[in-house]
Length: 613
Image (tube, rainbow, N blue to C red; front, side, top):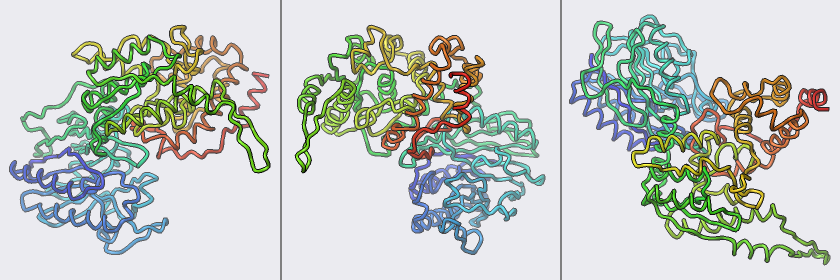
């Protein structure tokens, strides 16, 4: 039996275009005399459609193209593809969900000689339960194998079989898992390990077919990486497809054995580093999302800091330097060091560059606002005073809302948001200033990942240094006052080796690190080990003790940042632009956080009273 799987690009919400692409691949499969063609999950409808799934005319369109694709099967070629269908299409009766919505199903459609059968995704996420039914009682259409050309296939959707959701029937001979799951850091290694384990446990071949593309929830942008693979019954890799690339792979199954055809498609056996995978996801996501939005020109506020430097390097690679304009916007607080970094960066990349000093406009705002005396109807007046902190915010807003917005408009483009996840956690950004921008490509990266990616970009470059080395050596700084002079080694209040990992322990874990647990670990000298997890890190117990000699110092710092995390920063995150999601736990649409402020538990307050007085 000749089997082809198609790791193909899926356009969210575009069933007509997706069908057209599938039809082209079917023609190729027939030309190769294939017996079975496998497509990814939701290949007709696309992924992460939100409440578009409430639009019955859209689902009807999906069903129209489902039927057209199924009709392309014949006596020789059978087709397995993922799509959306009404509940009544599969079961012959209607069903209303507890949400009041008409139920749909995430299905694998098995088309044989123009006739269709279904397998249903039953392992649904919280959001999927809003629209999809999970009829686990119908075992015959969820877990039982289906015969295709006298061979029994166990067909699962969305990594169900990898999650041990169902047992495979002993009557099955081959496992097929179709998927369109978003990339997250470390996903490839995790998925491949699970595939290998499943193939060994059931002693049968396993075909994993994933889709590629970009999807979004309006707030978060997701990249689908594909990473399709075939394993034999001993768990040995037969074929692997590269991430983020379309791939049509042929394999043969005969007498219980599966093997790849001797073609140009060879197994990808060399593992990629974490940085290589992350870099590939960011480049693909930026390129595809801009294309999806019909955008070409991008403006970046290049401060000479590491965040804007990384953003510039990524965008230049994703969309080309001719479509990128860097703008440096200095005041008296900006050092020649960072100004020179910005200039050198533009030269290294080969993009457009300009400088727009903002000192004059900041002074104008100060003259107009400082000392202003508004009055009410009773004739009472108040006097407004701009503090040095207020002037810092004025600078940030002047750069974003005035200069970058105007330049982007003049160039028929958009300007970026360069904030990282560490800053986003505690709101270390100015509303309507550096919180602004159309898209946060690095918004799901912790600060240490920003540095690691900069180093990786230089290491892989064939054209010399891209990221100026100096930006990796200076202290991170917003340069908004004399207290943030990088030449005097003065910078941001965030102590990145420590706070970076502390904030990650609040956000990255399914069960966040409790404050009383953090305080207990600090008291026992075990906090650094906990925050590092088993990963190499510059953070040590000695470093923490040096920064916070007493329990009171530690508690003061802990509470300061926790209040920010749960306070105004929530409002900032709500108003922030979409981010490119590369972790399990991003901010945005996946993190349902109310703006209710910080709460300190009794367990924390009791322990604080005991160890900090």
